[in-house]
View 1 (cartoon, one colour):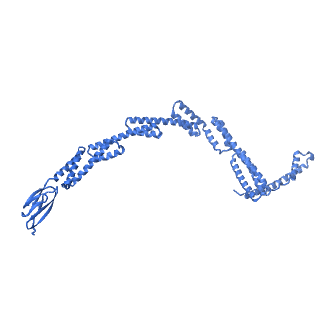
View 2 (cartoon, one colour):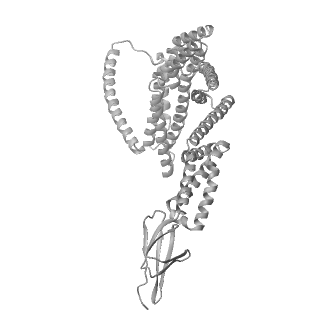
View 3 (cartoon, one colour):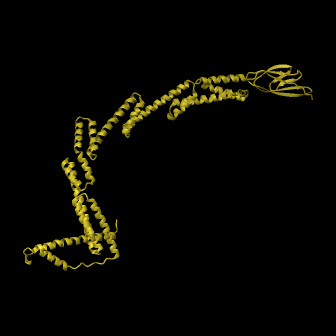
Length: 486
């Protein structure tokens, strides 16, 4: 925006151009006047007393103008002039906004141009340092601007309000004419533009209302629904249509919801739990807070859980009969995580753990049969076998394992042939077992284990040999003779 000084310079330039035009016009008028005088000289003269009252008034006015002294110029400080410049700039902006606002209405545009002319005069007076006159003009300009703004707003809002009232009373033709008045004054009035759109589709909306009425008479809910949807699409401001559509949608939603619950109950009765679950899922998407839905869902969950429990219990029982206790352990542990109070699963888990742990201990004895030659170990093995017999009736595999270990224990306790050879001069005995005597060759029987065989002879150093009799050993032999003299 140019400064006030620039605006004053522009105003002075305009004034000079106006003076030039005035001088040119003066000479034109002078020429016409001379021609008129020449013409009048040929006409009869009129006395001064016969002059028209208008002429007398003009003369008096000229006399008064000559007698009126120039107004006294009031002194303004620098700060006051700065404030006046700001006031001029602000007034110019308000006037410019007003001119722009009313530009599409000719009557108001004319009035705005008059205010604009007063503003230009105020700038001229400022340039002439008539600051008091500027202040007076600005007061008038601001008051006139506010008044014209208010008048302009009233000019387009009043017919709009009447048009809206007529439209709400279904008087579409009157609404059209009144709203057109509003738009003629202010084509950018958004509310009037919206109302015009509603007016344009009024007849189509009324036809849709009639379709809704017919649908209600026919008890055709879908027909009513489509009619109200069309109304809202044409005129989104029809609150009654929105409310009616919402009511219909709720009716349809409730009807579908109740239908899904009925289907779910039927599916539960037929033990088709998968279908019932889907029906309830669809119903929940419509009304998840329904107590009836919650009740049926709990019932279904209980039945599904019971069915799942029965299924797992049957599987566990089946694998137990098949003597697959490793699988029984896995299934029972999994089932108890969901159904911890199931006695069948609890018992199956207990049996599986007992059988599997017993089988593991028996296997350890079987894998190292040589340990069974030790009386302590053999006693422990026998205790395990005795305890395992209580579980053998539940597991044929465990029974077979028990019998296999018993055979190993019996086999380990069976003496093995051991052949002893000597020089027939050495006296031989098996320490802890008994005497063999002086022999050349002799076969004795020893149970699996570790033995020490001693040979002695007068005049010779005694000798001791150690022999290991294992359960799997065959053709064992040992040579012992005293050959070192002392």
